[in-house]
Length: 253
Image (cartoon, rainbow, N blue to C red):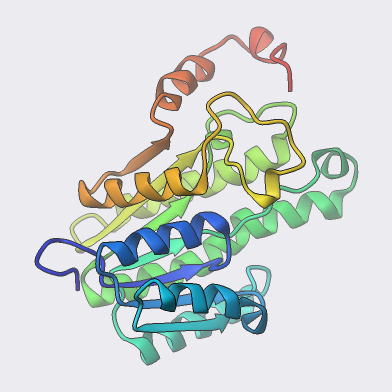
């Protein structure tokens, strides 16, 4: 369980090699976290991440295989992780793909890959995670959503739709877990400067993995339900959400 100061002691990260995930784990290590499990697509290629976390002070770091698209394995995977490592104070759902919108708009398989990864895979693994957190009677599930979930834009509507589904799932799951001792926090970053977005022009209010990590840790500290990164996007999206359809569709991609 969290220590006497409320700091996370143990974390399971689904999508453990994402830059936001690793920045978050490093921030948690500074707050005295000591057990970390990275669920990654290829554990053999995650050794650098594991070594960096150990160097950062984590006494117990493990990497396990996880594929968001192999939903038939998710229940067994989650049970095995919890059975072997015990309770977790935090589960961070940090995997996802941006996709190429031009391809997604004309290729149904490419569109399905984005939705299956960002939404279907998240639901498939999120349900057994919630079951195990409920059973242990404590813990937080942090879900990386996006400002794109608020209102799908023509420039990335497939990605936006996948994140909108994830966002709604996480909010409903949080409501269903009320009173169980389990807390769900939805994180809505804007444009984050990562390897995944390196080929793109930065959007207004662009941020960094470290800033998102800092906001996540702060949100956990205050038991927030929703975290916007940066915070000004809460106001920006409140305006965009209520723009008339004809005005909204004229916004440049």
